Length: 112
Length: 347
Image (cartoon, rainbow over all chains, first blue to last red; front, side, top):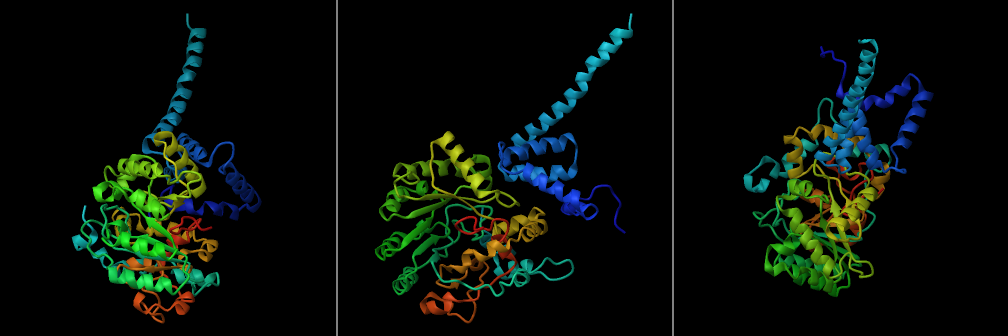
């Protein structure tokens, strides 16, 4: 019996199957997704690095696999890719820390 | 680093490679022929011979990790002048327009210059697949840019990336810097320069188990980076997919990427690329004069189908023009995504 777990790397290849349960919305999503990542005012290469950083911010293992491969394939170096991950991490860390101001405000409000 | 052949490695035997590629059993991946049948293109047939690709030998000054030829300094199999003469005699009897010289490093064959001069006399277009570093490796090769220019040779040179780390990982330490130096020498005599008529194309192939990105986008990046960092110019970039043969097959197996890479090639099967695969208009000739549908089949020792004469000494143009092409799972490498050929993407 196969081991049960929440994430399976092979499920990434089945992403397209989400349309099976809701064809119309699935089709619209994939059309939109395709357009988002096409060459535009940002290059497909630049978008790949943004996607890599966001994948880490949202901690999606499928997205991390997909955009680690895509960004490397599109020519980003290991160092550049890790810097992008640091950008994601810095925004996440900063997002927590900037709320420290709210904490300070509240403490100052209620404290003597 | 030694060749697989020198190491006595089991993948130096073409039969063993074919056993792996054509494996049958449970959960097997589709055969290439089945995919062709599904789109009505089986058997795949040649459309003529526009390009004669001549592999002048396995000898090379480099030992690249992905090399499908298993070339290197320890390989001594090179084409004889007698075989070259047979090729020249054949060319005289046909109107094949282009002769594409490859290896190994074709320039290391002692009869290379004589062969080029003789082909040049026949008025055929010549392509030399120059690995760049050969120009610098020994003083006797330093004048190659001038020799290429004299015969208006089209130069096609591998440069896996515009940074040293990825290039050297695939082609060996120091190869990137020497390649840049050689490209500057080619630019100096006019290669790659607008209006010179001297064509310098670069060849990209992935340094790892992945397919090439868009050829057009990559060409723009290469042009921008090489111009900015080194003031180097070139004409076109060819993005080529690595086929699971010889050292690249060894790399795929050892790195645990073989099954997933094959699946990626199969999933990316593009019927539009099949129509334009290079084997349909190219004939490949091995160092020993045997005939193949392409350089990859040559390295798997899959000669042209048995209904044809299989050696240059028995060349039969009419039969070869319409021959049935020998295919296998390795062919998925030429039909994946935008397709792949010695001239880059095809679809």
